[in-house]
Each structure stands twice: as C-alpha cells, then as structure tokens.
Figure (cartoon, rainbow, N blue to C red):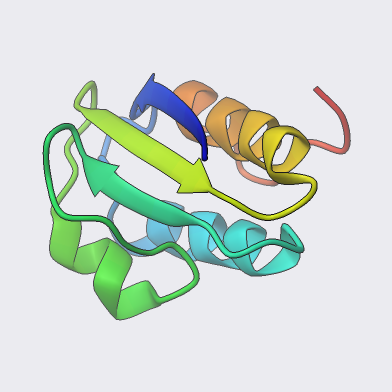
Length: 93
C-alpha cells in the first residue's frame, strides 16, 4: 500500500471549497484513494461527505493511501495539492 502523510495547507482546513477541490482531484486520480487523520479511520477520498466528516484543520496531518497500480504518482499529486493548499490538481509533481 502506498501512503503519504501531509499537513493540510489550506488556511480554512479541509472544508467547503478546499474539500470540493480535493474530492474532484481524488475522483480524477484514476485510483481509489482514502484519506484519514493521523491514526484515524480512513474514508473514501472521492466522497464529499466523508471528507467533510474528517473535520481536518489547517496544519493537521492527514494520511492519503491507495493500493492500485499508479498509486504512487496519484498520491504524490494529491499530497502536493493538500500540503500546498492549491486551487487545482497539479499536472505533474
């Protein structure tokens, strides 16, 4: 299983607009991805309700994970998005 641990870079945390950006990026990743707070229960990263239910705050560590082929590249891109608080998924890392 591929995994990335990153701190949430959006000032407002992983809520509303940032959660929407992240969920769209997770759906576009091409592999099933989960997200969890550090030591928390993983949820489907492509589900808006699941991501909002995490209540991840700015600076809080989250864990992104996937097991499919291509997981490393997808997680690298998603980790960059989350850690830098970007407005869209980066094309490359």
